[in-house]
Length: 435
Ligand SMILES: Nc1ncnc2c1ncn2[C@@H]1O[C@H](COP(=O)(O)OP(=O)(O)OP(=O)(O)O)[C@@H](O)[C@H]1O
Ligand SMILES: [Mg+2]
Image (cartoon, helix red, strand yellow):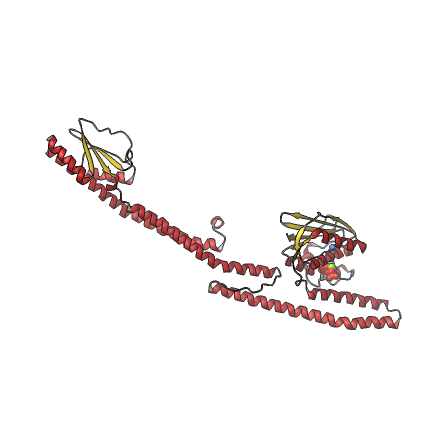
């Protein structure tokens, strides 16, 4: 039950706050409308109807006490003049009682008043004339035909009241919409800023605005962002510093070993590996955020990365469209593709690369026939310095930063990276980029 109601409620803050305003508004209008019609309008209509019926009763009495044609003509003329009642007598006629019965409130009120004052058989016709109401009354000598203006029976304040009710609701609703939209705008801006920050874009010159609570949240968000950025910067600066400082003594060690001649190949391999690691740390610490996003052709980027990998002896199948235009950071993106290809080459023998555009999304799939990564380790593979090899027990010499850098780069472009099982038997890396 709660679920079904929830599905019909608006999801946005603007929609909900408008609902909070509109529901009581309609309730209030309904209640006051009911009170008005029940109490006020009924009474007013009945009084008007009684006025007409009383006049008609008076005319009937006058006609009865003045049977001479001359006197009767004078009475009818005066009545037409002073009471807006056009009355004629159809002698020896009989009232037809068939035909439609009174429906509207005014009809009912008039019928009630007629029964109270005239006490003779009658028919009311409010439909055949647009501006007049016709009342036929059976008298002993014939049918009395009375025509009176509708204005004598209708109170026009009803329509003024109805128009005011609807009009004021619309005005209130319009004003509420404008004001609420302005209240919601800063919240939306804050949400967008938080989203941008999550995608790795720095949110510069964000001005807190709106209601006090929203400003507080925005200010807290800005402070948090600053703290996080400072924190990250300190860490990466430290990593860069350590790597940089270690590089010099390491180079010196390598040179000294070479000068001594001697057979220390194991030592040399170690040093080469350490140098490779330090390069990796430095690349990570330098970050890729500085590069600008520009429109680029994904296909030609892939082709050049693949042909470079082929020169290093990889067997790669490449399927791609002629041109796939995507906004990218070209250097960082190339490094990401090279990283993924390096992994695939290291663990597999055959590699396929496919790229294409589907809807507004560019998709790149890189598969290999290596051992793959078990499903429960895939999230870990993205963690900096995480390597599966310690458990696989074969050293293939990497730092464990490749995939974590790749994911940072792809996310900073608003895209995502997924690791899956490949039909080739190894890992399938799927990149999706908004284009
Ligand atoms: N194609 C693949 N097949 C099997 N395992 C893989 C594949 N790609 C990555 N992995 C696993 O995920 C781990 C993390 O990969 P990542 O690229 O981040 O680090 P790395 O390749 O070990 O080091 P680096 O790329 O920094 O030189 C790897 O150590 C490896 O165990
Ligand atoms: Mg790697």
